[in-house]
Length: 312
Image (tube, rainbow, N blue to C red):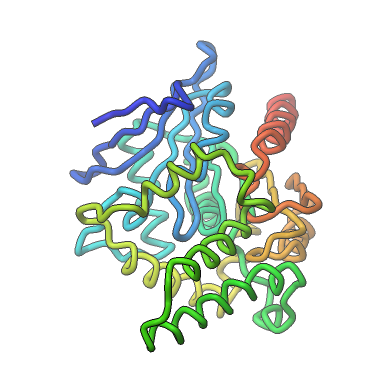
């Protein structure tokens, strides 16, 4: 079933057949008849295609856009054979592109999606025309980087940790309630938005809909645990991720923020120091998902970069 989104009339919420599996996507046709530069958008851990909703129509100025739900997230089911690892998701994204008939494409990846995109671009360079990494889930260059968390990490994660531990303790004695859930949800939203009360309700409704019901075949718990384990393994030995950074051939734009609690600004600056040929913007007071928090800046920076890359 396909549905036009009322608040984003050029975006269709639909399903794509990928090797016999029904994969949920948000898609928009390209607006320029002369342009056939497809773009595939990959979300982060625990997210869905909805995290891209505020920029899909703008990106469609450059060609067709598809944002995909990875298996186990959003509305895409898992199968018994799914590894639900970063490497498995790389293969899945390639299968989605094959089902769309795209030999090559621009990949936008946020958080875990940025890690997936980096590996895909490194080891399948013929498939990636250009790469946009939004707070990509790349590890510090050495595990010692975890011993010195940034101020943004402490300020962002501490309320979540406290509310989660409180919920666990009160839950054991039967006292946890909706107020505590609300506090934890607000803390999670503040990883993306500085003021959760100012977020467009239509965006929140779309995000909530992916979690408000049990969707057949979608095993979020299994996907979260398996993907987190896979990321942790890669972060424990950062060498493969950093080899991938060095191998990427495609023109690359890196976007992030100084208030990102999950991917510290210093990690992004290390990436840009290792790849001075990449363009990067670490924006003051921005958080983990620029395309949701500040879609105007996202599109403005992408537009300028895209035009300069085309001119080069």
